[in-house]
Length: 240
Image 1 (cartoon, rainbow, N blue to C red):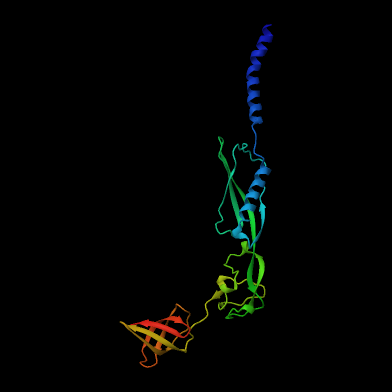
Image 2 (cartoon, rainbow, N blue to C red):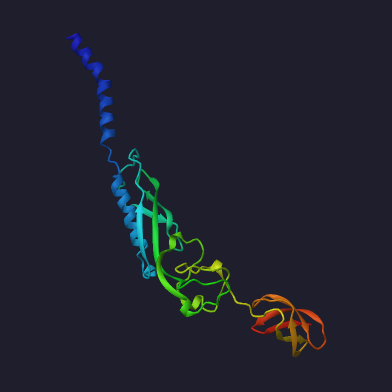
């Protein structure tokens, strides 16, 4: 009897420990595959909004570390994505649980955004002025295009190439510029203002430039050289 009573007393701590382990094991864990799917669904919904109606997309969500242990969330998960311009590329989604056992995790994803962008219709040389016949549209992954691209012909018509473009190469902001409005040696109209009096005279451009730039011109009558701002094609202005 004494041995049996001693055996029962010794087993109580072991029983308590076993109960704790069982309770811990029984705690529901967040299904990682479901978490990944939820993040993908969130991204699909985000990039399918009406503002993106002219584009298409592909989404690949990275797998989660199988060793990760998260408690089952008892409230709806919240999702947060920082991609204000919807450029895609390498993004991360913050998924958070805000119940009594809160947690948050960042899930990585690769988003490819496809848009119809303007490309060269044929090889174009440096200095070419962009015309309608020079360009066409092609559907490309804009997430991998670091420089600005264009989707509307009105954005590029009349601009000039800084460097040659191969056929099919996208037109980007870095390769386009305003054409020269004044070329060195041109006879331009020099518009000047003295008080309330406005005068227009002829002047020779001593350098080339674009609208908004400043160049030196020589008044053909007085031979005086002044700095003038280019106002438009063949027009410069100066205040005295």
